[in-house]
Amino acid sequence: MAPAAAAAARPSLPSAPRSPGRCLHASVRRAGCTRVLRYSSAARTPCCTDGGRSRSRRWRQGPLRCSQTEVAGGAVDEDDEACELVSGTDLVIGEGDDSVRAYLLKAVKNNNGAGILLLSDVFGFEDSATRDFAYRVACNGYNVLVPDLFRGNPWRASLPFDDGFERWLAGQAPRRVSGDIDACTRWLVDEFTAAGVSRKLAAVGFCYGGGRLVETLARDAGGCFSAGVCFYGSRMDASLGDRIAAPVLFVCGDGDPLCPVETVRELERRARGARAAVYAGRGHGFAHRPQSLEEDGDAEDAFDAMRGWLHDHLLP
Picture 1 (cartoon, rainbow, N blue to C red):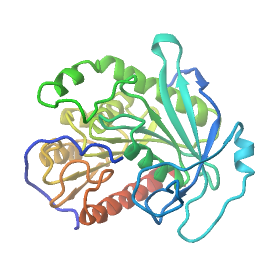
Picture 2: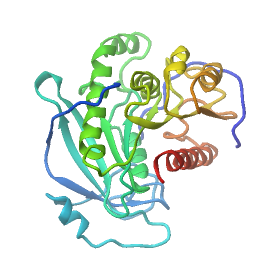
Picture 3: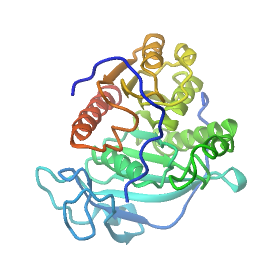
Picture 4: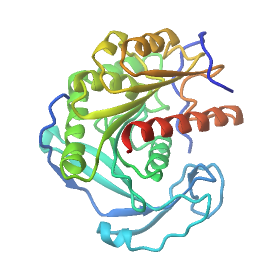
């Protein structure tokens, strides 16, 4: 279904998971070895442990490799539909109480040198749908950093929503979250841009992470990020649009009460170079948690729109 405009529906969270202006130094330690992951774009999810092509979100991990050189030297099976090999590494960014866990996915073959900061929804950085999407982005040649925005305490679908969600959210201090995001931004700059590996950086966010993306780009004011993609950001402050310098693609559905179309249109109007893609009949979470074949089609279209946006603004 092509993007269109308008409407509302009853509030709901995404379905439960299936199965800083100045860029200063950030410290990091690697938590374990690099893992080799293989992904099939034909299946749209990582390959299953049984080698099948089901829609399971289970990961198939290759042998542990302790250096990027070893990973790059491994054999790669190629066909028209198969994605290139991607390495995944657990990281701890920062020191002591200020440290942030994160996961880094790097394209091993045909790495384009650009870095992506991916901000998750409330289910956190270890959620399979988030890892799946991040992996697909890395498969297109990017280096994708997914931080733990919730310090090991993401929202869980098993918890009672009515009397629990707002209390949980109140425990995610905005100052702490923004500080963690800025620390991860500085790490990306140090790791890739300053080293001459990455030419440009972008931010991508979903739901809760989409709202934080707007705040992050407003703080950045063009200092570090060259582009952004916001998928149905929740609790977005449209007044921040005037301070966003990087061009942002806003993706949402016209039936999503957590991301009102009016807010998206206002951000599109205020932020320089912004564009909105509004999908008719879609609610919250359709792009990274599709629940039907129809949503699957729009999810694929939204992914292609994001891929084109990142290509146009990050690559020569």
